[in-house]
Structure formats: C-alpha cells, structure tokens
Image (cartoon, rainbow, N blue to C red; front, side, top):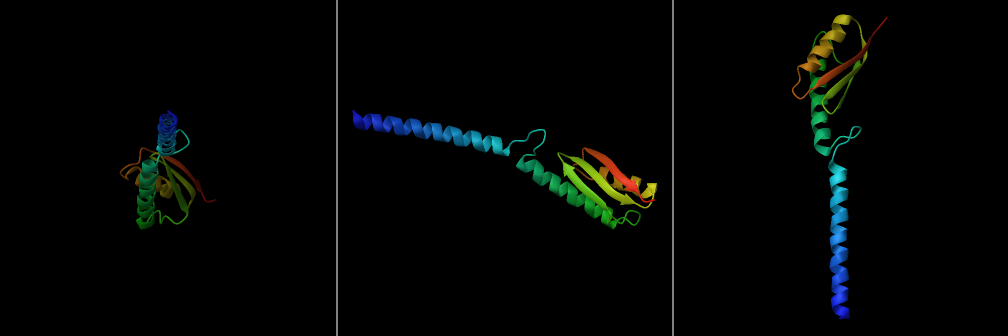
Length: 111
C-alpha cells in the first residue's frame, strides 16, 4: 500500500511538473503587445538588416545617419537627413522591403 501511494504521488508530481513546464515554455515563446515571439524577433532582425542595406546602398540616403528598428513588422526610422527628399527616399526604401507592414518616419531634417 505504501509503495502504491509513493508511485501515485510521484506520477501526480510528474504530471504537475510537466504541466508547469509546458505553461512556462508556451508563455515564454508567445508574443504580447509589448513583446515579440522568438520567430517575430528573428523576422524583425532580418527586416532591419534588409532596410539598413537598402539605405546604405542608396546614393541619395547614404544610410549612415538614419537608425532603423523593427517591431512586429513596423519599421521605425529615426535620425537626421539633409533634405526632405532624403527622408522621403528612406521611407520609400523601407516600405519596399518584404516583410515591412508599416513605416514610422521620425527622421528630422538638419537645420
């Protein structure tokens, strides 16, 4: 009887442990309004790299004074531009990248 009670408690403890681990892993990999999932983080990093490459290669933008951040497919451009044309071109280039859902252009013109 004692042996059966021991195994019963052991099995119950293992089931509870697996359940808790499952919940922890599920919550750790899912996204919220302020947190990306692992997959989204990787996708956003790729989008950021592609946008930065386009900005750097463009002769109008030159991409060195413009910062790029991506969160859940929304690209945030910030930094400084020499002209409105440069700021608009940066936004246009960012929008042309696959995976970009929206662009927020916070580029400031140099005075």
